[in-house]
Image (cartoon, rainbow, N blue to C red; front, side):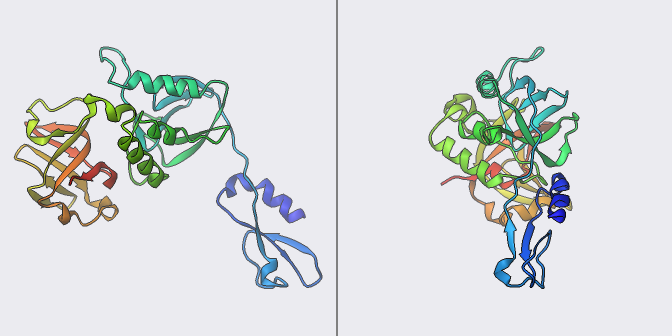
Length: 276
């Protein structure tokens, strides 16, 4: 039992480790972090279901639907999602921004949250990147997407909960919940883009007329003035990009403008939807 006590004391660093209980020839029980070859019977070596402890924190400030500050002063950016912006400084609120903030504010009343910090722990603004869970085990990032209050926004290499997030988004879209019923977020034709571009997150639909490759990126060309870019380092996450040629697809994200030319960085295949 002394070994088990040591294992339990070390558990915070062993969140993903397995602890085995086994019995020797004398009938004595032992505990280890790996299977033991000389266990009396193979079936005697079993994995213990030991739940690790977590630190929970109160949220001091809700900035918007995907950014909060904890009681310890850390600013947290929700991983895997993006909610519309709320009003700040000289910028008016995006459609649905206030709704997402209200939902999150209500959800955080009288509860604390724990964090699952991302592969990349902070962003360029020094915000901690994390998935947040309440004391009732509610996954807030996922629930925002399921309610139609957020869109999936995956930044490799962090791929935690991707399948769950994408499934929740597909269901929210089909049910026309939240942002998916708002005209401001309806997909628009690439041909309707002007040189001025478009502020904020956007959905664009068009036919891929050419695929251009460089050492660092793959470009899906829709017209002389717009293309979607996929970084070569993340190409393994995508299906064969040559399959997009000649097809009408929807791309989602933010526009970049350079010398009158518009482009969109596609970080994950969830930002591309094939149209029938």
